[in-house]
Amino acid sequence: MPGERALDQGPAVLLPDALGPGRTVTGLVGLITPVSVMGGSMACADELPDGLVIADHARRVLVFNRAASRLTGIPARAAIGADVRELLALHDTDGRCWWSCANPYRGLSIRSRHPEMSLYLADGTELLVTVSYVRAPRASGLDPALPGDPARTGGGQVQRLVIMLRGAQQRARLERTRADLVSTVAHELRSPLTSVKGFTATLLAKWGRFTDDQKRVMLETVNADADRVTRLITELLDVSRIESGRMEIHRQLVSVPERAEKIVAGRVAAGDPADRYRLMAADRLPETWLDADKVDQILANLIENAVRHGAGTVTVVVEPLETAGARAVRPGGEGVAVSVRDEGDGVAPELVARIFRQFWRAKRRGGAGLGLYIVKGLVEAHGGTITVQRAPEGGAEFRFTMPAGNPVG
Image (cartoon, rainbow, N blue to C red; front, side, top):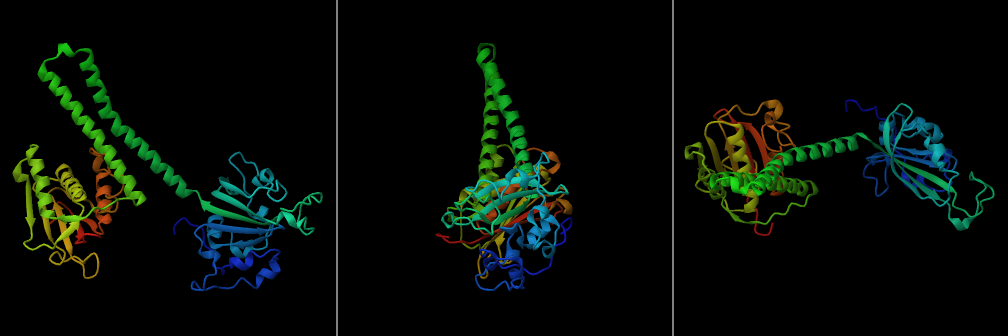
């Protein structure tokens, strides 16, 4: 991967044997052998996604997996047997040495772990570090081979120190995403709430000064802005359900052409010209068991997107998967393919990879940038797929497939 440190290609260290009490580095050498991925139930350190470093009672490194090599830039072969304090010269944001402050080997004997903390290597690399202790049974008394205060006779000496390492980049990206979410939501809420507050305060203070027509205009504006706030909150709840995998699908027999016709009729009733829309449906469509409300949401978002960002006639095409030349969602399965096309400029090829992401907006034109992300999540919750490409008329074509489903699926 670009920007990643080179991985050490040495063989893995087997954890069950490496963790044995009293294991020395000399005795461990024979255990450092290549292991097949299918080698029974024995865990392989190199297969762990996080960095793993295990040091014995004498502070010598027993285990240093491939992820730890990637995160620190230290080859595993060079790490085995080294003093863990010198190998991982960890310090905090104030430059204080973590080993001196925490004193893990000679510190409080009842400590069992340190929660995840942000520490830095000598070269400034930030790591998220979690430390766990493996101690001798307290009833066993003091082991003279273990470092510590000879006056302590109650056991509990450190036998192994287990250090887990994670890169901080993922957390930084998550924090940036959360900051973007807060900023976007605050911006989208501020405008309608300011309008609602302003009009309601004006009406309450000067009710008698306005005519009925003026009051009606103000109240209609308040109603529209309240709908806008409600819509944004609904979108955020949908995003939360999609990301957490809690999106529920309540299947019923749904005619996709009828749902599309209903959406178009609603837009025409709201003032759109009827000749702006065209609906094309195949004669024989398979029965589809889908969530009617979510199908309406998908179609409404795609049609709204075509109207807002496209031009010309908006065409909705519904056809069987086989007729559309699409691969069935499941082998041998049936379903429908729905295309929503416009006659505008289309989507530039370099934007295709980003168009279904959260908060993506074309030229910052309206909305919170969540509509297409939600559409993708709803389609995939049904077991379908969605793509964007150039329409035959030259505009954009959003095309999604839906499996036929079943009443209990």
